[in-house]
Length: 114
Length: 112
Image (cartoon, rainbow over the protein chains, first blue to last red):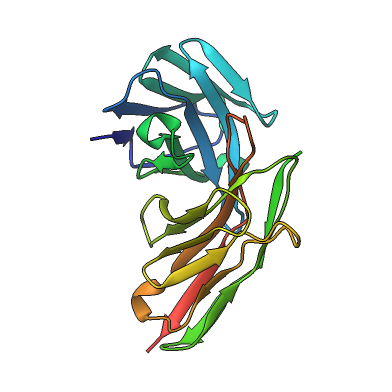
């Protein structure tokens, strides 16, 4: 069955420090992968999506970046975190190869920047 | 571009009350429409969906009808329970698009 592993689950980082959040997908091959952010009091914002290894589309200009070094691995990074980067980060991929249109989400990584 | 607008929360109801959360969308063509639910401390999971006009999605007592004439996909439940307390997201996937657009989310609290 399809699973998404995200880590770390919780992270507290000082302003200006680097960031690396990892997402690994199992049970599917060559999936589209997505990073969403849910900030306090705000909705779900699409940050990046990838249709294949090394292919990244950015939705919102910011100090975050994404990389896809392997088919089922998606990494969200920052060189210097800002307070506004705090939020709940969710990795997602299409369920069942995309036939249903539904997205399947990981359990998220909660980032607090102090 | 495609977008979703949903009713701002928070919404607080008593157990067994009727629930409506409004959702309208803007999209070209014929998008697929979804409701996702996020229980406290968890990721999102699909609640229901509809892929064409006049389709009704339903699950766990919740329903939503894809209304193309009003570009809406309102979520309803006749009798809410405390366990329905969660954040609800309306979303759309445009035809031939790679991504999914979400509304801002509506936090529902049901009190006993």
